[in-house]
Length: 239
Ligand code: 3PG
Image (cartoon, rainbow, N blue to C red; front, side):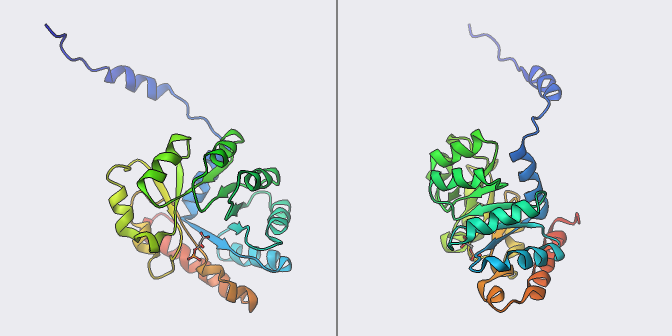
């Protein structure tokens, strides 16, 4: 005769109540990113604008930026910003190779964002306690990223890949996975993403669009950042 089924729930609960969550640097960065709810994605052509840009974002309430490795001076700009603002949330975006990830970790990036899923890159960042956001836009990529230990995924390119509808569908099998949708997000659709429980934050360039930078419209950048934070506040009701 089969043994009656028993529950080890009490054991599990007493274990979890005693467990002290490890405070990791990556965990703290993730927590700050979640609190902002917004990640400005910056394409910086002119190194000399780095300070004004960061000042504008900070004035708008967001001391955070993903500096994408899409211009020759991007890595230098990021390094300078990190030196000057060691407590800010400053990371690298459009990181495409493990070598680039190593360079970004080397200069002290708070986080590394990639358009795709590269296991070696994820593993390197995890080994160095740096938050890594691999890009995913299929269930298979989600599985691959999770398998090597990523815990926060960039859903990219969000709008082109199916937007909010697609993310909702993913939350069936991946309801415990959190995403940072990026690509095609703006003031107009930010709220619909933030309302999804699995969305930790949204990335986007609308606050720091290249045309605003070229025209030196830093006041407008600050205003757009402020308005984005207001949307986060409205959705979450916690700011
Ligand atoms: C990215 O690099 O994550 C995206 O290009 C940003 O997308 P967006 O310019 O549509 O906001």
